[in-house]
Length: 88
Image 1 (cartoon, one colour):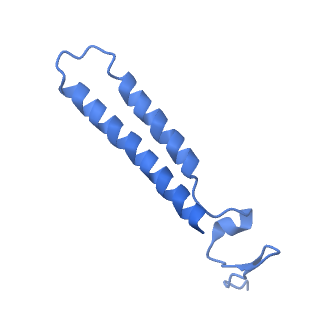
Image 2 (tube, one colour; image 1 turned 135 degrees about the vertical axis):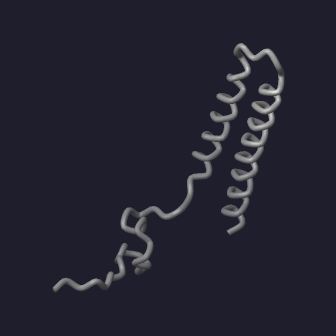
Image 3 (cartoon, one colour; image 1 turned 90 degrees about the vertical axis):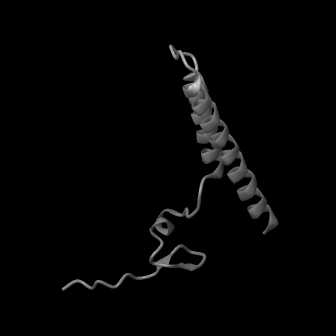
C-alpha cells in the first residue's frame, strides 16, 4: 500500500516545505507587475465604456468612480510591494 506521507522537496539549495506546491516549479510568490498592468487595463476598459448611449450621467459617475478606485488601488499595491522587497 502506498504511503500518504509527503516527502520534502529538495531544490538543491534548501529543503522546501512539502505543503508549498509551487516549490516544485521553482516559484513561490506574487506578480505585482502583472497586477499593476491588469488594474490599468481594467480601468481603461471601464473608461472606454463612457462612450455609449447613456442618457443620464449616473452610469458615467459609477464607471469613473470604479475606474479610479481600481487604478489607485493597483498602483498602491505595486508601490507597497516594491517597497517591501527593496527594504529586505
